[in-house]
Image 1 (cartoon, rainbow, N blue to C red):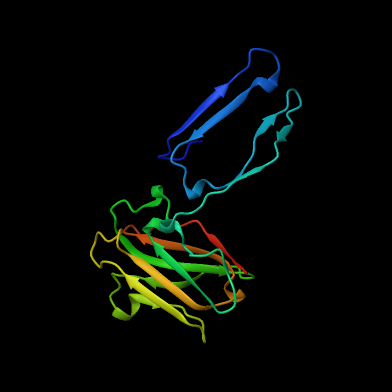
Image 2: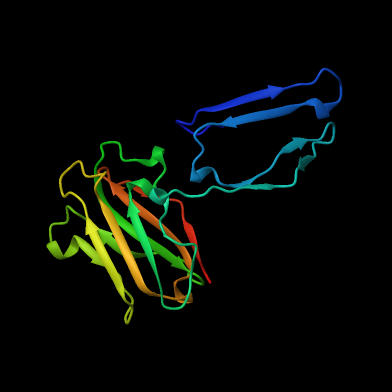
Length: 199
């Protein structure tokens, strides 16, 4: 089950005896990225009783590069500033627009206790009305500095960017953050979500 475009090398190893403990699968993952982080485990099907047995899970941690970070810190305290950044670098390489054209880019979050993501800021460079091109959804009484940048020409995928400096961060900002974009064919794409916790 190799993801598209990934150079995995898989070896199936069988032992020389009837001892099933000699069997193994070895997977070499080249060019590991942040998206390979997560929980892993091994399984085997019991001989004769069709019983699935799981190993203890283990966790693979990856340190994100500055280019891949949606939120610039892992936790936030009262009146601390944190920054949310959305551009094409926040998405998997396999999720880049085919023709390098982005119709809409948005920064979104789902706060603790909420059921749905809501947009923080949205950039729609081809919107007919100027007031609809750059929109922010700043809660009343909050201090957000939002910057929109990027080309309003057809092949703009490498240039579109949203930067949100939340100046008055607090535990009210704890939750999941992600980026989304709509391509030229109106297909919606999402980055992986990251969790911002409270100090």
